[in-house]
Length: 343
Image (cartoon, rainbow, N blue to C red; front, top):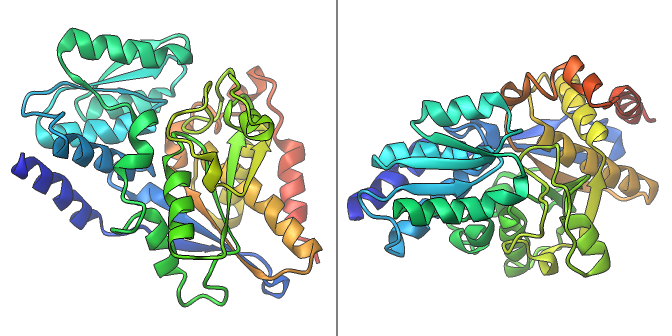
C-alpha cells in the first residue's frame, strides 16, 4: 500500500504544475483573461488531477488492493487518466462510457491498457458500473460522488491554490471571477471552498452546456434531469452528488454551437488547440468580460483549458460532423471576432 501511494505521489512530482496563459485582450480594456492549461498533464486533461486524487483516496481508505479491478463511469477524460494510474499500479481497468464518446478518447483508454465498456444511454453508466464492480469483485471509483471530497480543498497544490500563486505578480492578482465547467462538480467545489477559506473576494461562475441538468436545477432550486450534453466532459443528465451549488455565485448556460465556436476562436487568436469544454468556459468568460466593461470595472478573469483539440478532430473539429447535427458555428464565431474588435 505504501509503495502504491508513493508511486502515485511521484507522478505529481514529475508533472509539476500547469501553465497560466494570458489571452490577448486589448490592454486599455482594463480586464485581463487567463487560461490555465490543464491539457499539459501527462494524460492531457484536467481529469489527471482528479484521477490522482481518487486513487490516493481509494488507497488510503483501503478500497484498492494489489489486484483490484478498477471500474469508472466516465464521459471519457477521467477514464483516460484513471487508465494511466491503473497501469502505473499494475491494476486492471474498465471504463464504462457512453457509446457516443469520441473514438480518440477510446483509443487512449485502450493505449493505457484499459477496456472500454460502451452503453447506449449515458444515464445507464452508473448502474452498469455498480454491476461490473460486483461481478468482478472490483472497486467502482465513482468520480461523481467522491470528486468533491477526494481533493484537499484547503491547499496541497490543488488547482485553486495554484491559480492564486500564479496570479500573484499580475496587475489584477486577485481574480474578479474564476470560470469553470460542471462535470463531476469537483473542480467548482474545490475552487469555491478555497475562495471562502482564504477569504478572497473572487466570485465563481460555473459554465454549463445545453442539455445538462445542472443549470435548470440551479435556477429552480429543484432536482432536474437532462439528456446530457454533446460537449464531452461537462454537463450531466443528472445533478451529481459532488456538485455543491452553495459555493457558486453564478451559472451560465452556453449553447453547443457557441461552445464549439469559442473552441475554434481560441485557436484563431492564440494558436492553442483546445477542446469543446474549454470553448464553453471561454464563452462564459467573454460574457462576464462584456458585463465588466459595461459597468466600467477592471480586473482579471481566470478559466481553464480542460483538454486539447486532438481528441475531437472527428467531432467538433469536423465540419461534416457539425453539419450532420445541424450545428452552425459561423454566427457565433463572427460574434466572438467582433467582441475582440470592440473599442
